[in-house]
Image (cartoon, rainbow, N blue to C red):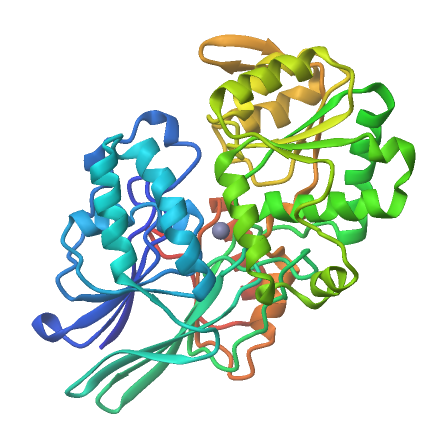
Length: 463
Ligand SMILES: [Zn+2]
């Protein structure tokens, strides 16, 4: 029997985690695709370690395949190791470089402050990493009449992201199962777009934006320009709550291109601050991994441009520097863009900026990513334009800053992109499982797939 099950999201605090198993009962072997930590609505509920510990059998799990290093796909890896998982962690080459960095941060925040213990866990993770080049089959196991191989293909979502093709065989039965991971929007800056797989008998696909499309890149760039111009006109600050990996680098890339195009005294005055050691780390890694950039970005480098390390860019590391920057920018009248985490304003350095600056109409808040229900980010987005307020640490902050949302930088495929991905599969799926999205997005995407006549479209429980 070749079976798929879903372990994520069952308790509301865990993220993506799927299992593919080949064989029967005691004889079976399997792999996990991702092992993530949910961020959003339930985060503030105070998930205890026991909520996060692995609550399903893993004795037969032979490997973990990581699609990409966002925390909702990898955050529970320490718990998986704690549960006794002793197999390899298979991922793309860029992901292998980024995974220990992202988990170090996650461990410090959610697991332990014990430096030695963190080093031990990271050492263990590094020793298990098996980087596999894109487009190359890798055998996970082949014993008796059961075998399983995986192949990673570019997903265009963040650096290193992949969808996973799995060839599973038991006796005469042989099946190609594809797990999409998170798919990127085509025409995103920096990364080449994903290509559909040639074949998928069963497809497990994300649906974060299964119910809508993004603005196209030109519209997005135009709106980003308008927000920055507001700051340039009145010396305000544009606050961008940004996730460390992906959006931050895409935005820097776009801002560099706007400065390059419009230049002049005004635009050259604009300062860009990345106030996040982690985002700065990942920007460096993005910069180092130019072979994974798309043709457009590679061409800019050839022309002598530095899309991710330009002149007006400042990086803030220490907490003292951070506090100084908040204080300085709240008082100064210099146009500035600040990128700081967390992306949904549920914590991190962006919170100090918001507390200090939401009340001033010179400032702007620009959301570039998905805001989950229950996060301060969602509240600012909902109530800000109506002159409302948001709560941080039990205090109320009135919102006078202008609030904007530009959806395309969130690095997730929109509905048409997801449909194109599926339509492009020449040997199309006999079953599609929709995972990873708000209930309404999943339902809307299922409706669309049903309407187009795809057989067996399911929304599995606990996905
Ligand atoms: Zn992701």
